[in-house]
Image (cartoon, rainbow, N blue to C red; front, side, top):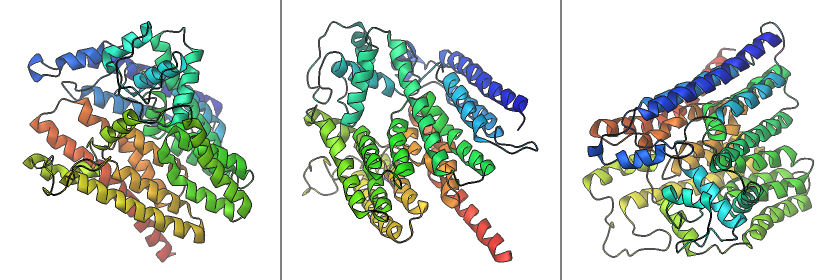
Length: 489
């Protein structure tokens, strides 16, 4: 690729990011729900925040504008791998992501309050030494930032649902920027997201070091410029990108440095416990070269989160937060399967009078039973995939249980789909599946982004069905095409 073409494409991505940001902010101001809807006060409160949070808008215009903006940035990024007669290289792809990511980090809105919680947990622990896992009563400290946060998060905030490694990191970041304003503290989480995604790109480049340069650039771009990666790293600032970075580096280093890989895996698990799903595969990979090293790797991966947890009291408040997250059905397979019960009014009733509330589960309702069945399926898929990976060490065996876990989540938030995003840089049907899932993932913001109505409810169902089904269809179609070509040759 000629340098002028790369510069033009990067400029186009940056320009689209800024133009889309301005358009979205303008549309957000025009999308205030009518007072009679019951959502106007909530919407205006979100819009009044330092970085406005847009939820339950009067129309779909904000969501559509966000999707189009990310699509244009993504298209410009993919253009960086076209050769134009010369060999493609990774440099323009990486430079393009950095420039586009930094431009998107100035985006005018958020579509979720998570970054506000990150700042609150970090400030409570890092500045005032308050355990954010034990928030049972109102917290009274003389702090302008926390006072501003309480306006939208309440006092006390929702208990910290993340791993202790994340809270330690949030506390360090909060202490370092304790004298800055709330806008900068929120933006810093976007910067963390961009840097985390960049770390993943570099790890993937190492893992693809034996792949021809042109193909390697294409596969890096497949991850870097996937819409869900662009959005969740630079705009949404969700900590899932942060969690994935050390996990991918663990796989990149496990063959040569298994102990470092164990520490990185432990760091990932400490950030979010869900990352433990990848640990069996990492141990098996190390076991093939050095049994003792594999055992140490597994021990280190478990010791790191345990050590991080010593700083906190992971008690009732944290458990209540996790239980609340597990009870939220939103744009997911669980939600689709439970819809008949929810619409009939039987969604909250126990399936039998003899079933009392269970710890962490609560009443066994039909939606909850569906959820338990889905997670039982995840366990079966995980065990089968681990067994298969021990025999052949295929990337597909790692991706399969992660995909099952994403589909089993009660709320299919876009940031969960990021867990699959590194698979975009692989080859075959699973790469197609991950790419499609990531491209459609922002549909997940629809249910909380637009006010409910009979028409919108039907559109939410259609969007959720597309989100769940379209990646499967695309991957199957890809597999059928490859099989057809193979048969003819």
